[in-house]
Image 1: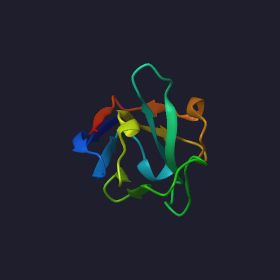
Image 2 (image 1 turned 60 degrees about the vertical axis):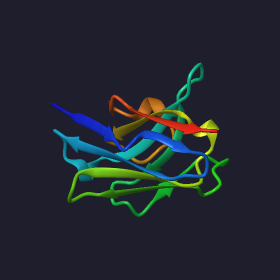
Image 3 (image 1 turned 90 degrees about the vertical axis):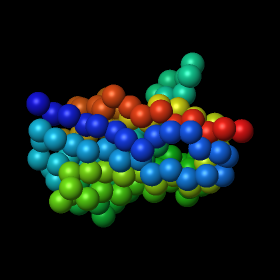
Amino acid sequence: QVQLVESGGGLVPTGGSLRLSCAASGLTFSLYSMAWFRQAPGKEREFVATISQSGFTTDYPDSESGRFTISRDNAKNTVYLQMNTLKFEDTAVYYCAANRGPWTRRESAYNYWGQGTQVTVSS
């Protein structure tokens, strides 16, 4: 049974930082590209970052200004999202997702999803 468990969310002031973690089990982690998505209240889920199976390739939305960094540790079956200089509009539930194929921004390509972790940025 595949499980993705996110952690590291919480309440942070504007300008602060958080590191999210997603621990995977029940799959051969190194065979999966991974991604983070987020969903704010009243909005559709949106792509945040993705990383290749090896970790050598990462991709972010065109609008991303370099505040977020995705990384992974295949020895620990864990993917991370380092978020810096957080803004109020970053408030959302953050989800990690696993894709047996190549890295992609396309949400529908992801086979497995975590339950999400809440990130709240206070203004």
